[in-house]
Image (cartoon, rainbow, N blue to C red; front, side, top):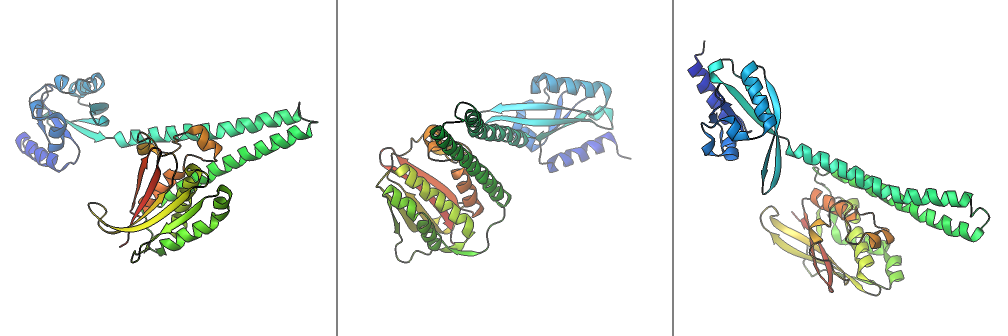
Length: 351
């Protein structure tokens, strides 16, 4: 049979083993002890303070009071704000078997769940918005073709072409959404096949030859002697990466310009250690304002909404590129100078 003192000692030892913040309050509601995580959260000044002074959140204070009075477990939400943002916790409040030992509060960080839910809501809202515009246009033209334009062949030809363009836009969006979903589902599985990146880029160049000819642009591949281009990768996904980046360089580089693909080796530090293959896709376009660069890989983010849509962009291309590069344990780096062009660098580990 454990005495209250023995039980308190066991409880203190258990506190140190719990990775989440935990505190123990006395029957009168003063803080008796806290583990290291709670101390980092509330500070050493909290020792001996009342829960009313310590937490200052009515819902949590009310839940604590109810548990102290009734001896029945409860829970509440606790939000802590800092310069890094708001952190949300579910606080489980449990009375201890010996009344004089008080109650225990366990703080479970659920911030990531809130962020995931917000991302899901934003994603659904964005997809709905992106699909609504072409659908509205198609439905409007169908109504017009059945009515005022029913006997106007010229109008029918024009409207049917627009409807086809809008339907293709929806098809591209759905294709990119499916592609993004597949990439995300495989993100923790690093590819284990050996791929020669120069062969991948050459295939993309051959596939895009008609586009280069139409825009009077040319593509130059720079590969210094001795640069190793074979590494572990997924050939199809890397093809998608470089096709996307080279197509973007064509779209935003301008007519008659040069798209340069430069391969080079680097030695990585920190999380990217060892030999690295860097593939720079460089255009000669207008460049990108530095304010936009951190957000370019966000889903549906566009620097110029109207221009991007007019060029057939879905707003998902760079998000797909980022996830594929991450799956390959690499990094995507974007640099740009207004008036001089942009450089999208794919950095991949060779070993």
